[in-house]
Image (cartoon, rainbow, N blue to C red; front, side):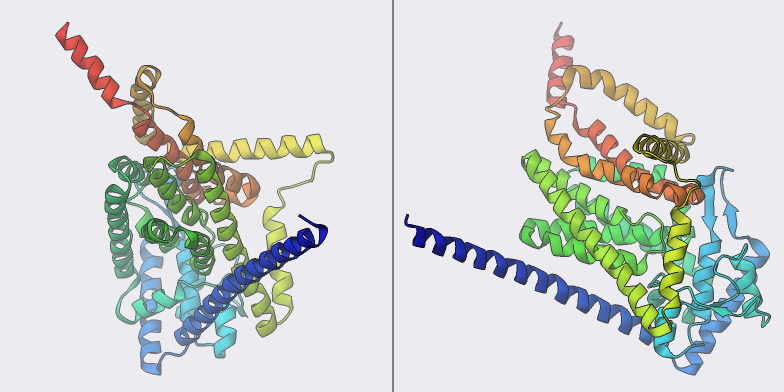
Length: 455
């Protein structure tokens, strides 16, 4: 090939690559803009109720707040004194407070403000809510603008017809129905082991308690719905997987109130890898898919977060951006900073170990830990003598490490919120339990039992 031909070929490849990158960027940018428009319009409509409906919402929030104040507190324990048995009425009260104050500001200030009376870090949000609904607010109006508070688009319409205790029941239906549909779908599209493993892990995460708190439920419902959509898209048009995880990451940030957001990446990705293993895909392809989807999810999640900070600072004032950054710095500051790479590394590893241990301790409370150990004890000798090829299970490595890395990076705030953050480690436990269920060659095991019977 002549120099001119080589040059022309190089120019063609460069032009083609730039064209592909431009198309990729425009596609994601268009989807992101559409998502932002949907978020803003849905929240704007949420602040524009007719006066009669607004009065119904305020009446039911006020009644719910008074009843909750009489019967429970900000952190109520059920079943056991373990932290994993605590529900978060503190966050739910804050949600109701924002819904109650939804019409006290002009539309766009309400969309990005998330205003309440008092303090976003009050010692008791239930007390603060109760004071507001009874006409004696505990302070001036303040903004809680660093989150989208997207739950308002479904919570406020429910308060038109229902009280908080009734919304808990609706929340339970949404949680259990989506979990059931997800398990059925996994059974049909992947295998029964993946369905049973997910159900076992959900039981270990204190399944009866999750729907009692609106804060705890949202991420799980998004995850269960995402599993169904992701598997369906992956089977039909796998090239759209990246954009789908981008959307899931963005939607998670819109709705999530900082619980265990990475589950909306990890649970759908677990289902994809399980499907790929059944279909005999290569490990490197599984890891590649995991990394691409994780990057897309992170991009959607953080772009949506920073878009809210930017838009709220434009609508409410630049101080909101500064306040949000200061809060983030405060949350992640866990004391004096060590000097030197060795000190930094040792502190990071220790924090990772301590927070993962704390999460596992909450998940493995009796009888869950005992059942897990029994399963492991039965599995180990079977695995030694009748194991399958385990190389393919390295495809789960990104999914397995995701909650550990998350807990390590946010170890400071996680220690404060371990009573709900512990559920994130369930993703790693899910991989382990699925490995227990599928790494034994039961054909060999049955043949072994048949030979023993003949003897």
